[in-house]
Length: 268
Image: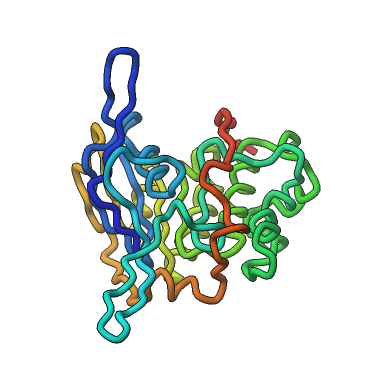
């Protein structure tokens, strides 16, 4: 479970101070597809970036519960800051996609495993086929469409079967059929006992969610469970145990994902 407490983020825009997040507190549970919804400028991207550890909040904290019980009367470990997690614990799909131009599609998807030698996970070939980009494995990102690039970024995030998966508009470049494809994969990951948090303003994505958190002006204005799916009792750490890889020398800093312009939708 992710515990976000009193997250506040402000930006300077000329002489004006803009509050992107205003003391947001949330618990994000494993076993359900959670969607952050709201209009542009509501704070969705900032919320996901802060929770994922790619952006620093001005105040507040974000921890992932590791589920370790107290031992000999000692207090339980309170959790690990998400910004210190590696690919094996947290997969992130940014709007910019952040694929490495010099690597092929298969190499981009394989990158988390190369940074975490010995880690298990889902084979690259299986991910590429499931995302309908297997025939593009040897192409560079510049040689495929925006929607195909986005599915490659999703495959990279899923490569090590992370306990936490965060996606900022992960269906934004897809046509309708492939929106359904991506949603099916995200729900499978969630229902295996993992945390899945994505943002969207697409009604089809929102209607497929188990929980919808609606933001406006940096605040949570609604928080509803739509499907009534019971949460599993597994903790994030238990869900991730077979494939966890330690953050550290082989873990990645959240700032290592380059930013770039959003790609055009895949209409093929």
